[in-house]
Length: 186
Image 1 (cartoon, rainbow, N blue to C red):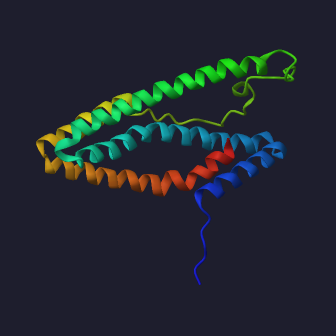
Image 2: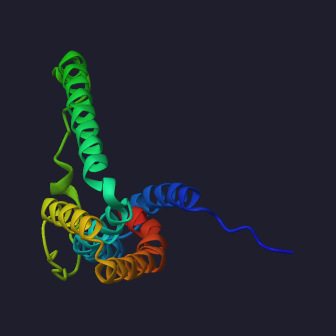
Image 3: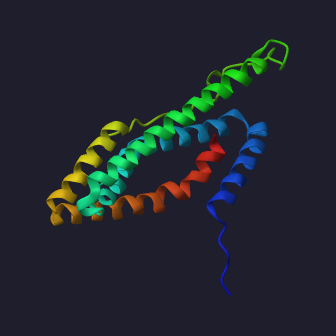
């Protein structure tokens, strides 16, 4: 008889509930331990995100083959148009609804504080600067992916497919298992 594993979403929901419950009663030193974990995990995520972009976008575009440029241009156009439309809708909804929420007296603001100022600080941090910014990783990925597709550079394609395997292993072995603890610590 095989045991059913709990999926990521139920683990995250449990982590949120436990985090709220423990956060209300735990001593500050215990909270500081979780804050330290969160600081380190955030640094790691910031380091890994450009690698994830490169690891998935380059092989994805390279696999498109000869029509990669045209498909990428159409996809980018759709992405930009949808971003402009959704941003505009969000702006107008914000302008229509938030002023009523933010009027003094409509919601109790007497004890409102900036959440960043009330958070317990971690015991220490470890800096893990990313090798590049997210936009740089995207542009590099598009350039390399298109270049591999156009020149049919099978050696480079193999390297980036293997890099994708490494990134997949990092996500599956480190990020996904630790994510509930990160949510708990928040």
